[in-house]
Length: 299
Image (cartoon, rainbow, N blue to C red; front, side, top):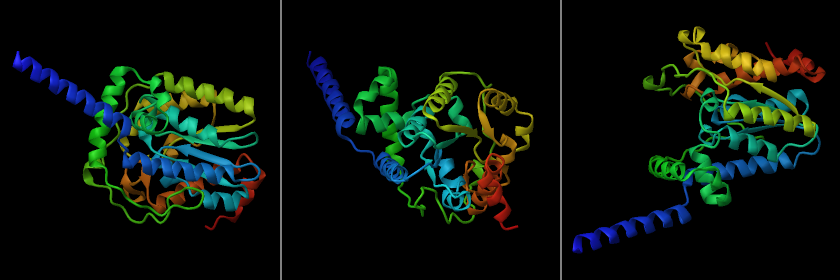
């Protein structure tokens, strides 16, 4: 009997600790991301007139020099890069918050986002801290899993500081710190239409309804020869080209390792310059301003 009472007391104590953690614990990682997103939203909302918003995960932070694009396209550009751990649904929701009629949205999703949950591990943590009514998006099983997952990730988090431009892009990322164990091809399952692609199609309708130009593009990633025969890329391109205006092709944004900083998705300043140049050229095919900007680009 004493054992059962002790066990019951222990279980109750664990439940209380979990409940208090879920209600009150503040993840520094999510605080940093929330502060960054708030600054970008404020910057975007203070722009008078139309703008270009480039949204995606952390790869967007590294890839697009939006200050340079703003200067040469003569229209404000905002880098709304955040983190792949939020999921595509969260990233799209954040983009909608700063868009209005006449704006342009360029959405660049890391390849992994096409088969990960629409609202992923960091979205759960964000909602837990800042918008608890959104937790209804998750089953109780998912809540338990993400709570434990974030507990582990929070303990491992090491805060780092990068130079960020006023428009939200990382800058002055020099050299390559890509470790050998990360220089491996990404693993892809067969591309299939799912909740993420449904959400993209819903975004297309939303943009058309609100007078927003929508383009999809591909992330920068480290080149591997195996990608040339991986059917995932062909299947993804076929889907996107069928339904969306697409900037570039996946192979155009695959570079050698000297262009990458600390991840197969995170380019350094040389990679950023290459991607920004390519983006400017692609946008130049769609506007007179872009053509003039391309002509000014130093050789």
